[in-house]
Amino acid sequence: MNLPWDLKVNQEGNLEFGGCDLVLLAEQYKTPLYVMNEDLVRKNARRYLRSLRSSYPNSDVAYACKAFMTTWILNIMREEGLWLDVVSGGELYTAIKAGFPGEKILFHGNNKSLEEMEMGIAANVGRFVVDNYYEIETLDRLAQKAGREVDVLIRIAPGVKAETHKYIETGTDDSKFGFGISKGQGLKPLEKVLSSKNLSFQGFHSHIGSQILKLEGPILAAQRMVEFIAQVRNLFHVEVRELNLGGGLGIRYTPNDDPPSIETYVNAISETVKASCEELSVPLPKLYLEPGRSIVGEAGLTLYTVGSIKEIPGIKTYVYVDGGMVDNLRPALYEAVYTALPAKLLDNLSEPPRYVCVAGKCCESGDILIEQCSLPPLKPGDVLAVLSTGAYNYSMSSNYNGLPRPEIVAVSKGRSRTIVRRETYADLACRDVFLADLKSTVFLKTDR
Ligand code: LLP
Image (tube, rainbow, N blue to C red; front, side):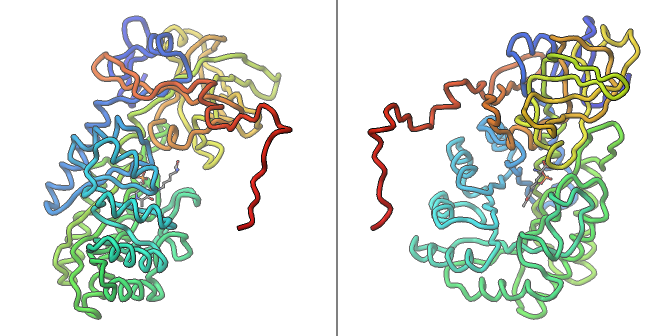
């Protein structure tokens, strides 16, 4: 059997990830359990940095921590020399708490609050990626108050389709993110930034979408952005020092997915930027890439325990697991398709596989993890591994139906350790203000 996800089968016939037996991990830590492979995460981060720097030396890679954010990963990214993309006060807070250097943080967000901007200035973030006029004006004012200049990139929607699910497409003219350029709107925010006393214009940013499996979109976006830089130079005689082309490289969720490798993707972008700059006589800007999913996605999997199995004769067989849309919202939200394997692999392979539907335990008919997949016969208590869950699973998890979030363990070379503890029932109620005696409750007046 072809096991592409850095999985192995050990002598017991069990799947191993990061050298750890998945049946034993499920026993030791209980399920549902997120498992993150530390060596794979580090390897992917290094592949990005190495391939980008070797073809384009004046460059940096920022990890988009919305894909998976814990202090563990922030520490890894700091150690590996990456920058960080944050999109909120919460992500910024966690990054600073984890000791991430502020000057290597890019602060994104299409609607940063005043408090978030103040936090970013106080944390001395390396770049604010400004997304709208309100932000430009407010940031200028706050920077003046703080008594120093703030470095900014302007977010541009280059009018390029990403060929992905429409919910995760961000670079078209009607995008909610950034300033479109197809009708010249990109020049006005630049004028505004250039005329602000306390903002220092560094360059442009664009990100056209996520889970992109073809190179055409990213290549076209890179060309458009360099053309835009040339236009800006001709009109404003201003130096555009930096170009950030965002993230977006897709991963394998099923054996049918065939994304370009990190190296192929990075090379295609950097060569395009170099060629376009040469053609238009634009000095090479510093280049940033901002991957999230392609660093952590395939480095994670989720273990579930099978509960009951319901056969509806002639219709379908449901295999229910002890998690669901609470720990993986992606199938319900984006119709994402995943791959599942029994953790006790060889034991189960002796009997012919059947088509089943892997469903979660939430009170929603849409709580389906895998609509149809072929699995060997399973019984209650068996452990199922769903692959490629390292990105946008934990970070989009919820407590719907009162389900506590799973524990997260990191595995490396046959060893495992908890990096986020399992939520408890007490955690679920810990922020509630407990009103024991409702009659004595005092309602506060809302008038001034
Ligand atoms: N930079 C910016 C400005 C972004 O908005 C994103 C993702 C990234 C970088 C990283 O993109 P990646 O390399 O991970 O594709 N929840 C969705 C994905 C949303 C992506 C949001 N932005 C999902 O589960 O598919």
